[in-house]
Image (cartoon, rainbow, N blue to C red):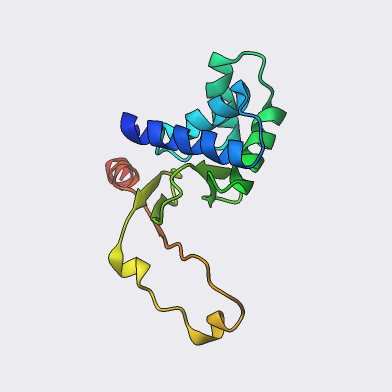
Amino acid sequence: MSVPHDEIARRMAAFTEVCRKAGIKVTLQRTEVYRELAATEEHPDAETVYRRVQKRIPTISLDTVYRTLSLLENLKLISRVLVTSERTRFDANVSPHHHFICSECGLVRDFSSTECDQVKIPPEVAAWGTVTSLHVEVRAICSDCRGRERRER
């Protein structure tokens, strides 16, 4: 799934502004790594980002991609999505939302839900510290994987 052009433009403008305010250079490598995340809803892992950006910048290294992803996360321009224990995936959608994750193929989809947003935090959890965000993960088997299972039977 692709992100609408106006949303990509908004994210890129926010990227430039956040970097400038933080005193961080807006380099071609950083811009292209962020652009790759800003333009997709796929929640790619670092290696996927690297392969895609390398098509535009053949000299970029995997280490540069990892360092850039870490920097972007520290700047709160992206977040991590832990789909499996194997690979961390990244999300440039930093607005409040939740995730549907297929436990078979790893598909990740964003969704919004007023009901999920209003989940009451149990008092014992709130006593551990100040809650700053709430993310719901719905783990399921996507319709493609479910259909594949049915056809295989």
